[in-house]
Amino acid sequence: MTNYKPTIAIVYASATGHTESLTQMVADALVRQGAQPDVFRVKEFNLAELCCYDIVLVGTYTWMNGEIPKQLHGLYEAMEHQDKTPITGVFGTGDRCFATYCGAVDLFRDMLHATTVLAATLKVEQMPSADDCLRCDAFAESVLTKYSHHKGLLPATNS
Ligand SMILES: Cc1cc2nc3c(=O)[nH]c(=O)nc-3n(C[C@H](O)[C@H](O)[C@H](O)COP(=O)(O)O)c2cc1C
Image (cartoon, rainbow, N blue to C red; front, top):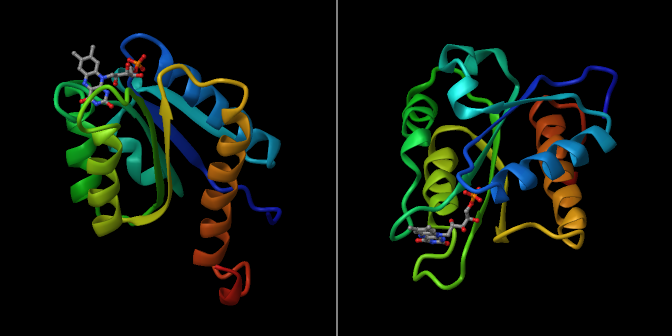
């Protein structure tokens, strides 16, 4: 990390609390690496402020047959059509009992890969455990490293 701290928004939806817990773990991982994320439940996030952030991370659970929850449809569309190209990442929780495990993460991943600089994805089954802490650290590190490369702050060979 350099002295310049990227602005980071984490925007998430959570019906029963699993993704909310994972969001907190991702935020804590970023803080451990010197970043200062702003965390928003999606209904509290103003989509017009997407362009204010260097890095936008999405947290999602998966609904009915691998779908993105309704609350996140507006965010999905806004990120698909935004002018600025932020560094992005998507993480989420799901349940392997369903045919399309964490399908919403995959749907966001495919769109973000096409429209932004996608840094990392992370899937966790149901409530995250202490063991997932290291995976959150790796996710946070990938995002911050991608940002540094993108800004030319690190040699390209390390990407
Ligand atoms: C009606 C219903 C449909 C679901 N469909 C899927 C699915 O297709 N794929 C999946 O991985 N998980 C599915 N899940 C599981 C949730 O995504 C999972 O429990 C998640 O951790 C919930 O996150 P939250 O606690 O943040 O709301 C479904 C859960 C419910 C209740």
